[in-house]
Length: 429
Image (cartoon, rainbow, N blue to C red; front, side, top):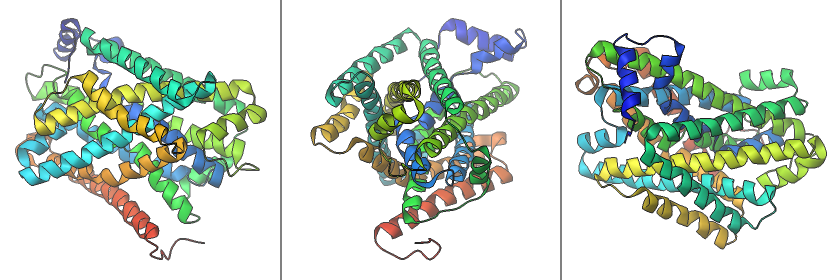
């Protein structure tokens, strides 16, 4: 999976041996968590966060915080798996589970990958179409061309790809920092929303599950283990411990930024739409409503961040899909072909005239249903001494991971019960 230049590999080896020191040398280890963090700021987040903020104000911020903490834990475990074993999660699943289980896992993971790409591809296309007043189909073609162009950089080594995606993450973050400075946020209510769990009604539950699905991403859990599996030449356990420390710090920092961006999305929507425009539930409506409420600059920044999110997450989604197929089936598909296959559902959705934002939200619910598969596999492998050796996850980590997986599973079961009309006592209204 990795394709680092010899210069980068030599630099990493020099840091591990103590020949290079200083904060700049630590940057050589940065990249995997930044790439994985793009999955936590993809267009699916925009759709669910706008609905959360517009419909319920700051009430559902606690769901974003919870989802982000769960994401940090599982991305750290995924990175740990790749660093310790030298294999990614899909490869370990293929090697350790019975064949029927492997085929089922692969099928579910492929559905999740397609749902992911649907959200990412549509998001970038919607942003381009609105910002430049283009037909949605034209926006999709431009998104496809730009995505292919970025994927070409993989041939130059993986570092240029990391730099491009890191720059796009920076654009998204700066746009939302500016949005928060423009929007009149009620910081007291935002603080209460983060610390006080509440689900006002069944519709809030659907959005909460969508937020979980949009934040904790199945393909990101698979991908992170692949991005770290052969990044550094590890000679002994002391090297491995150093790499793990660097990895854990990067995960916390990268996903903290992603979490703040998601919270900023909800706060912007709550500030701009909740009072008087609570019905705003679509990206297009949000853009058109933002212009008179907060000005053209705020609306343009919203779309700029959406385009950066859609393009970067679409690139990352293609990389993850390629790694999932290669890991489970031991079949390497050219990345251009993988990109072509995953674009088909998005073009089909637009061609059939399906509401784009509705498709985004439903794709996130599909992802939340698929999410337990890699989560459970990751917990199993992280807890096995024959696989992890001395780097087995400790009892506290295993308990927290199990609680995180149970929280996701519980929300999924409640959502399914609500969808089939089974009464849920603790939901008001």
